[in-house]
Amino acid sequence: MKIIDVVVDVVRIPRQTGFICQHAIVQILTNEGVTGIGEMSDFSHLPKYSLDVNDLTATLKAQLVGRNPFELITLNQEMSELFPETMYYYEKGTFIRCGIDIALHDLVGKALGVNVSTLLGGRIRDRIKVCYPIFRSRTLEEVEANVEIVRKRFAQGFDVFRLYAGVNADADEAFLSAVKQEFGSQVTIKSLDFSHLLDWKSALRLTKRLLPYGVQLVESPATRNDTEGLRNFRMAIDLPVSEHVWSFKQLQDMIQRDAVDIFNIALIFIGGFSAARKAASAAEVAGKGVLIGTTQELSFGTAAQAIFGASLTNLNAISDPTGPELYVDDVTVEPVKYEDGFLIVPDAARPGLGMEIDWAKVDRLRVDGFSWGDQNVANLQDRTRAANE
Ligand code: LMR
Ligand code: MG
Image (tube, rainbow, N blue to C red):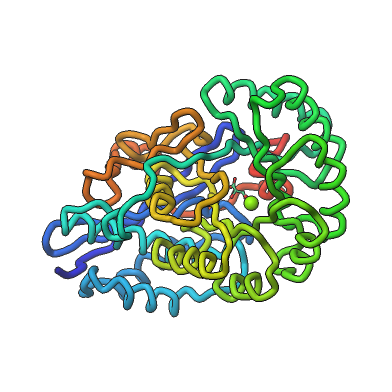
């Protein structure tokens, strides 16, 4: 089997917050008529420059056309050389590698007539508990709208939430207090996510203030790549600490310094199934747990994350992928499903990822290429729309 073409479609899909995310759907076509699909999810993160989609497509074609898609290890190695690690959380090259690796797995699964789970060694669960994200309140006035989101989502079966915190301590406290008062033990706050916005001491001070409201863990409570700060925080507080994994070097640093309890692994931030499995294995060997993180993928990318999560022996915290519930639109025939706050892993009997793209939806949502609007930094960090937009 040989790859004969690579096609990249860019789609723009708003979230319910009004924030618009740009994703790429990549197709890898073969001479035997089997096509693998991948998702490069959510390029709408800093740094605020855009990829040229025509140039990206030409690069991918030059590397992949004529190649055997079953050579997953070799192709992944080559992609890592083309799009190297940078020790940066939102590195766009990692998103590209992820989309290609997902597409290759989808392709190989379809060619063999098996679900990608079979390629990963099977499943040990068919649903994954997830939490719904509450985006950061910068003012006290924003708190009530976030409590309303809890009401609405709780009614739909989501009973675990995570809070992006750290900019307005009074607003963070007001939110947690209101939720505790209204829902009591019916609602769990999985984590405070400081998104690297605070140095570890400031994060520690605020965590201690918010502890009485009850949270399960604290995420990213130090500036980016400050592994020593993470360790200092971890040693100073009686709660598990989680951090995203965005490079093998950073993962190695965190393991060496014993800086976290739980590694937050998402396919998109580490480069697909192959890289995520290595990261999860390293975590397991180091005696650490894993949760499935998210950039907030569409249904196709979320299915990939679910299949990855279904294979993990050390998935020991509540996970994050809820993208299909956040976006106002999607590109698959059927969305992935959520039940009682669990992400349901797509049907194991279906080949590849078991998800089908609805090309009429892609046609409707397609744009010529990636481009930025006039969002300011706070809106990009908080995934919200600027008041003046
Ligand atoms: C999102 O887009 O909602 C997340 O990727 C934000 C984040 O960095 O946690
Ligand atoms: Mg996070």
